[in-house]
Length: 298
Image 1 (cartoon, rainbow, N blue to C red):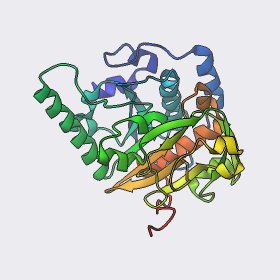
Image 2: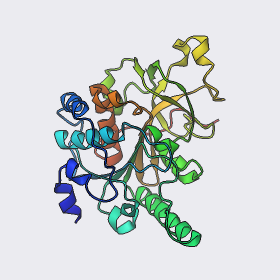
Image 3: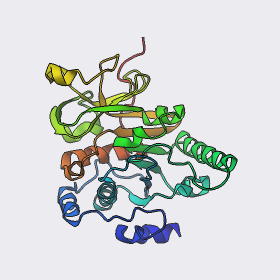
Image 4: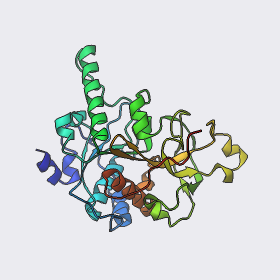
């Protein structure tokens, strides 16, 4: 069944129970196809399979369908991986999850493993089992990837926050913002050619006990020093750092997160697609990158 589904085109997969039914806008898909990079930054060490999970238990982003299509096409075009997209949480059962090399949380929201049927005891047991399965999966040496509201998922689950790196608090900025390369030499940042840039998207702020430079390798962060006072006032973090993208490790596994991905046009931005791809390949173990925390804890 797994191989059969992988062989199906994405449009056919949406007919499978557990998939979002709304198709991505055809014109937007054309933009994505034109923007896709042709090569991966690293040669895969083996055939790679990624589980793209986009279930939402809260707010649902309109960019989910396009993002799912874009990330699937990105793997197909570059040969870096094969993606299987679902909103069926049963794929987090250990025997199913074992078929994959990484999990990609694509704009998931809130407690996505909670069941709607069964007794409270049964639902709690099932949720705990799936959470434990994901933890064991990453700890064992697999990858975890997240974009945008992957950090608006399970904000009360400490281990998930540690893996993904941040817990969403608010999004004060909905405009073009200055972004600086915290680690210009990282191969995951190669797409930016060592240059800071500006981008318009919904920019997240994270809970103070998460998204810290002392526990993960920052790649991109908002350069608040280049913003006017009015826009600076939106930021309330005690450490004054507003990470956008980072990598880390968890057990033997590797994690990559980027908060960009609210707006559809992010998915036809070639530079951002290259950044995503490099992060995905890092999480898969195909692209070597220094994940030492940006700063030493005091």
